[in-house]
Figure 1 (cartoon, rainbow, N blue to C red):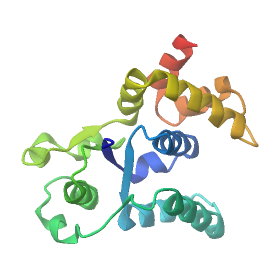
Figure 2 (figure 1 turned 135 degrees about the vertical axis):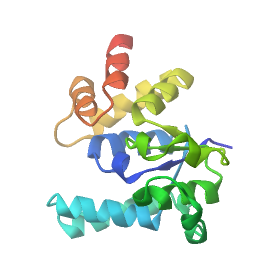
Figure 3 (figure 1 turned 30 degrees about the vertical axis):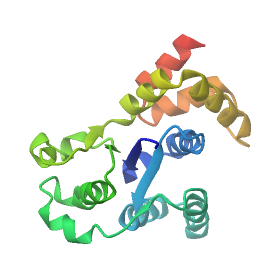
Figure 4 (figure 1 turned 45 degrees about the vertical axis):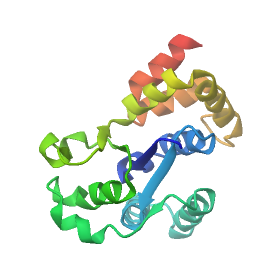
Length: 182
């Protein structure tokens, strides 16, 4: 079975990072998980950034169709027992409920070690997560990044410009390592 990870809202928000993560998941490199709370937060944040609600709803519908088994349910009763940042308790509760191996998030400090002590959930920055995926399946990752750049109708339409966009999106070490390998 694939390694299951909860993708926090903050890693789903940047379009190119979201696309990279979901494309790698489509290749079967890991199993993405999220909750309705995560998707609701993503929807609010994207609409607040002036993306039309219809476009956001279309995106979320595509995510649900592409990954029908990604949605985690039945975690609400666990939220109160979580001792991480109150705004992220739903994320940890979903990860615990789904028996996820990790949460991929930029907000690593919101999940202190004492919040994780009794659970087998690792907190991973997306830069580290993508570097791990690259180490484990470098050919698949490199091929998918090339495919991603080619599939874009607007910039970034080259691998070089995609890596620039990923660097800006918060995964600069991953982008640098890809540049080093190509």
